[in-house]
Length: 248
Length: 114
Image (cartoon, rainbow over all chains, first blue to last red; front, top):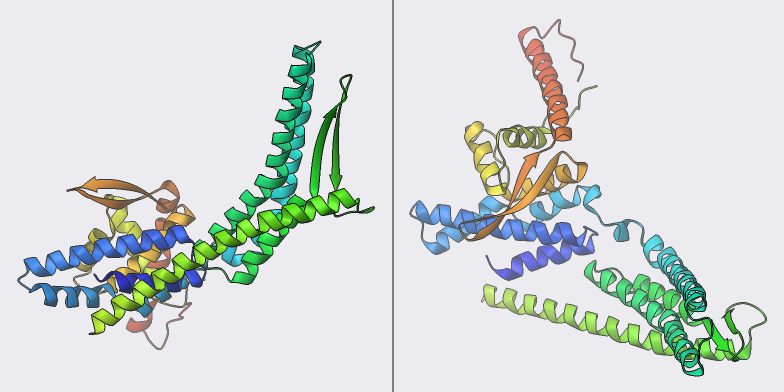
């Protein structure tokens, strides 16, 4: 079976909102079925070309194959059914959850360290402060990017409109980047603080830090989006070339 | 209330009935439908898969990958929920055919409830 025919069907189903796992399995099963039909027709004495033509007819045309799948709304992905939830509410919940998780682990680490090291040395204190700073960077830099990247990849896989993907990336990057967790230790006691540049009184450091992190994580996420789009377009070009060759 | 579209649910009914006997993959199912119905019901062969996926999603079927002769096949089998669904579909289908048969035999007096 020419690869291009199933690629067109795959694109059509994904764009119509059928979940990628159902599309992947459907295409794999159709390909296997086609091979079985060709084998059956060849065993019955047909030439290879005649067997393929007959197998194509028996399998059904693209419209029928697509329509029967599209007639099953339960096979559509959650992303296609509720894009506002995945790309709007999703990043808000995930960013807040990652911040809450980071804070909870940090507070636990402070209590645990205090319980184990009653009189920490200066070096131990410095190591702890460094470790917490790295952790905070992960929470406010890496986590929002990871969430934006996940939305980007999932959106590409489902062939979602760019507007939804951009909205998800923007929410994850801005909401995540404008929060700051900070731990300081003056040698006598440590202090864990949490600040947001999105709420009054809009502390200058928080806002500038937020903008800085937004630009970096946003640029990285957009680069990932561009890479995904390039791959997708390359796939389409390959399909078009194959289709042209098939016609010729 | 019987489904007014006669063919609605027929692919599901046939697939569940066949898979009740033994697990099969798509190509085998289509071949079995052709054999059992003596080619009276011929589906576009590819359209059997959306039905299988939907039945699996509803919990009426479960699938597993199995390597046979160097090729990986997706085999489907009926679950307990699928058996219940099959019993319901058989009842519904029997009711339709009984009603239609009565209507054909006694067209002037039959009351059709489809």
